[in-house]
Length: 556
Image (cartoon, rainbow, N blue to C red):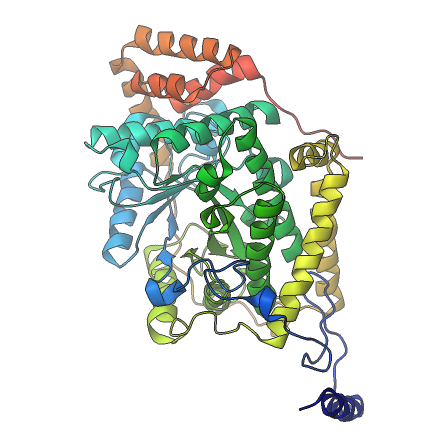
């Protein structure tokens, strides 16, 4: 069909569309992108070079040539609650049910680098994840789980290096070689200052620890990913899809600059960087977000940071379905939402996936809800046929248009971050944006716009703003964490301290303080403190003694 014929048909369609009385002009996405009612050759041309092929630059269609025709994504359900014994049982249940790898959820005191018996921990022990205070806790957490055979993701940031050291020592005590360990440590401190607000020190000491970890793992742990740069928490805080991708990629570029400032070769450490994204409910926008992310990462790694290895240019990522999209009202609807979001992640080319449980808006997942979430992934993988062909949506006018649109929006945000830089680096722009509260302000504005859409009725949440019903009489089974978990954990911690060599633990903590005052790599001194039976809170406290703490600047 010639261009003139395409134009003629488009004009005929346009006239008929305008004459349709029931048409709806209220079209938008969560990111406020105006979506044309129809994409086609009359208003969009697919560029074959920008789409490309799977496993080939610019990786729009996936990071591997075979994608799921070669192997499916890793099913990695996020789990952790109560005591380490409770969580260990859940891990074994999930592995027996077909899960491929582990993903550890820690409780709030652990995420904040505090021991369970500190006053600030009261009432929080074991409630949003598992409580980990000591090396003994980590050994029990992974009891009968061979750490050199099962990959483990640990979602922890501010005290990540301390938990990493405990994990490595626990593996050694299993008889495993640390060099054989595979898995991921989140470690992403930028997103804490941007969205999640869980930090221990000012940014610079945290970045020093991350640089130390990059050096250590690059030298001695070839299968381990020390950084999982996270957009998930940015999105859950209220950002748009484009903001999530832009702020996350910017953090990734800043970590590349950190590694290069340590003299590391980007072609060696670049493949160790992985990402963690949200799969939200706007189906096609999420797919486009993942496709655009791969393209931008490959371009910047090559053109700005000099990567020549394709492995360093691959944006590999884990995805979790959107917790913020789930509702307490009509919670069975959450199964549908999660399935749609999981399918978007799969069609977007994720490397691993967690599906949220239907009851997570109310409590930690029950055994039944966790099993349904796992089965959701298995149904997609084994029954739907979406893995039969690689990137089945590639070349779609709408998908490629949306990919280009998200990419342009993200590049505009990246330009704004660079504009804030004092020295032309992304790192400087990131720190300046944190210091001035710019990131938080952008996210807050996006969340406000979304709330306005809900209140105006241009967005709907089924069961909340539309199709509302009286509360069902059916009560969900809710997992409740007993107060006995906290009492037992504190008693165990007291016994641990009483049985250890107190002088040896204190000496190791003193050596760690001395190391913090110097400029050497801190992984060794932290690991020595773990071996000396210092607790998580004590190790983090020793570093606070030197590095100080951080308070977010007030926003006016």
